[in-house]
Length: 328
Ligand SMILES: C[S@@+](CC[C@H](N)C(=O)[O-])C[C@H]1O[C@@H](n2cnc3c(N)ncnc32)[C@H](O)[C@@H]1O
Image (tube, rainbow, N blue to C red):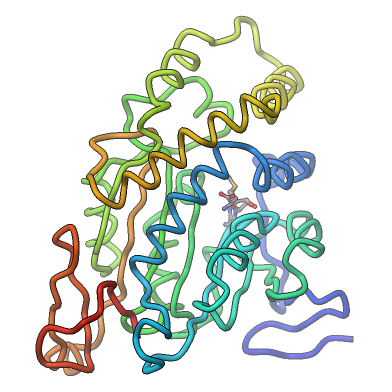
């Protein structure tokens, strides 16, 4: 039985689907890779490190209802191209009071099915294509984590996401950074490009979004990654099967002590990012904002924050006690 919600119908198993099943590039995301992604999103040091960096950014960009004296409501957020739900699980555990509604969307049905036991109890799952999103002014926060570098029409994706965001809503984007770090691995995993700060500025302009914050991360490990990827290129990988085996080998979770050590390195970097600007890294985070309509914007005050960042607080006409930007 199907139940209708917005432009999606809810299947008995709990997944929301559009009237027409979204296309999914199986040749790029072969179903076996999602078993790998499921484990990696939860346990691999790289994902755990990214999660730590990101949660700092989320906390600093979204004021919690408590810190705003209960004035603002809790937020709704969707992780688009979220795979098997590892980030949402982490977000739900680390910031339980910030969001009242969480959702996962992906074009892979396999990913959404695997995500059921991970996020099914607290997040809706939507089978949707980033190039055909069916929401209008719906979400306060959207996450696009390591997705757009795979999609040729990345500007279209950002325009679609813009439509889905409420005015003043935030979009968190992470991608691989800097063309300098381009290696055979980018080709194997079918990246279209890596991004710089300038690329994010251009994307913001093309999609009519405001780039509020842009930071590189994965700094400490960048030399090691560079050396490993630049000179570790395996010879004679020609068939799909050989490439697949190689990716499975190189994307394995390292032995526990090494995994823990590398995660520790990332924790230090995430903590440091509160105080210093990281000069470069192998990843980049952009926080984009959907501008409010001009008539509303006129009554909004820019409030200076730590690190020279600013918050838009529509409820005051002068400096506030808030230390983090608000989006409502
Ligand atoms: C590299 S994985 C990243 C997964 C997750 N965001 C993370 O970083 O942990 C890319 C994800 O984007 C999804 N994806 C790719 N193209 C998409 C599209 N056009 N619409 C929706 N999801 C898409 C894939 O199915 C996959 O789950």
